[in-house]
Length: 212
Image (cartoon, rainbow, N blue to C red):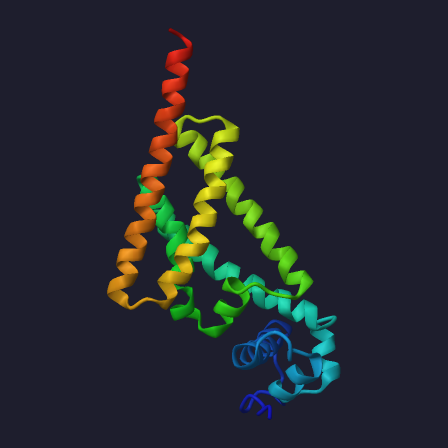
């Protein structure tokens, strides 16, 4: 049974604060029960407010869900931006991008795992996840092309490999003990290093051969 968030339902809050209160209630529901039980009524009960008040801030439960998802991505993006400021080498940039995902479950809890890591059956979440993945692949495609002097086709294929490999490695990482997590991360970075360097050398060799 939903228990209202203590002491906030009757307070006069700013629109921004009220929205955050409602998202906090929704976050608790998702963390405890997953996406399925998230409804406007459940959010209202958990927040200790009327359902009409929830509708003043969100059109429907899908809008609540997408707001939660964007909040998790905002967390990732802020962590990446901070880490990228100190990243000099290409490998450091890879680590700056993957560590927020790997540390997310510990830092953000069950909601991060449910919204970011698990495959959702909710169409809107699926569409947002696909769009996000496409942008990530595009980012790494451009970075790989510049770093290794590769064409768009080779760089794009390697970007897809890098992102896909991370999906598998991440699940091993989250299930492992701390010592084993370091080994999993080292293995991933070794795969990234050898794969990218190997393809770059192969392409360079082909180019050299074509000129002889």
